[in-house]
Image 1 (cartoon, rainbow, N blue to C red):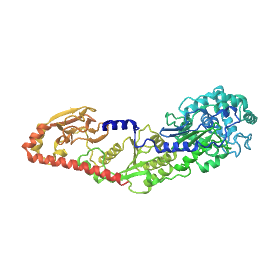
Image 2: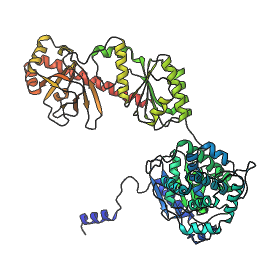
Image 3: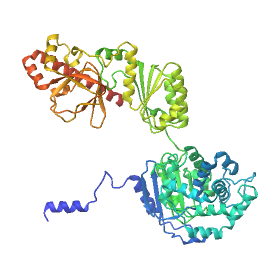
Length: 624
């Protein structure tokens, strides 16, 4: 075999890598957990429902879904089983959605019972202890039945399907088995009816409850359902808002205190992730803003929790320090940068007199760039920086482009601060998000009379607008409709009238409509332009704006150094300019070397100023 054949054979036998690693660390961890815990055969199958004794004790599946919708699956993650008591958390959420928190609270408590999940006992005021025990779950089914009647179960199935991101079915054999052997649940239901917790049709309510427990799911389904809770009610796989954040908070609260039967206290102490288990062998765990976990293994401990599932949850929490009460965050990292605009201008090129005003009044514009999710603590820190520390700039830009979310508490604090600043004469400009975004909606709703509040999608646009205000206030505003004299061009600085007249003679007047492309990237660079009136933007292929130019400025000047265009130039408004062919310009420079030297010196100065500005921005980023 020759060397070429050997290399080909070797390449064919080597797995093709799609990244630096064949397996992400979290997937390796879950795989290791599955390998370690699958040999643990302790525990028993649930036997009080005959059909559950038919489960395969060797089945063991793990699934984890991140809030950006990535799914990890290991083992028997696609094996269907009945959801059983795991359904209680999601049906509780549905009851809150349908009848409201006040009605649910009047019917069901939220305290741990300290007794078995199927205890026939109520609180002193004759309510179920919480929605995670059978009495509370049956009461939830009753509330839904009162609204939907015979359509109650279909409402439950549809909502759980939304949580899972697919249509869920029912194991009719398990439903029949539960119905035939569910005398203890019947006793609970009639006790609830005796205290008017349930409506008259007790058997119909019980059938809803038995059917919801017999809904078929997989470990993957449970992980998606958990991730939906972790993602403030938005299914990260489908993008559907299944439930409101307020209901999510109530649901996770009860899961934390009562979700793991009479092991709930130990669970919170050791694992610290809101969870719910079921006698079918499933466990669902939701860590807010991070992940949803679903496990399936039908062997249960004496608390009726899955033995292997518990071990996976404990290992995950311990290995990655995921206990919800052991959080570490430094609010000072919420401000990525805090600066004025000295040397940090927008992409709008300015005429010399305009730039002089900005250089003198740079402290009139303050920019805060925020980073990370904004909550009560981080926004409190930001508002303290705004209200207690100089500079007191009349134009304040707060950039949110690195902020994925803001809590209601954070929006409340910021809204009050923006209102107070506006009343004191400060104009606040928010950037980094669209007006349709949840961040803008939350802030604007909590800012009283936001007449001094401005919004721009891009930070550069916000800085440009603020610069315009400063220039206008100090008398330097230039109307883009006014025609600029060629002597104002930076490229032609220090040229006398005769030299400028010669340049004009070589040039041709061009007119462009708003939106028209003047220069296209990649085309031959055979001319340069002197902008007399109007505005143009210099953009990359991607649409990113490199510069915005007004009257008295040149563009396409890099044609003196380059053979092809490196960016597009488009007319933002009706434009009038002079086009100078490069061939004619080259002939003129050969005949007039002194003029040529002035122009090349001016070009070098232009490029130097751009480099200084770029370095200033790099220095700013490096400082934080």
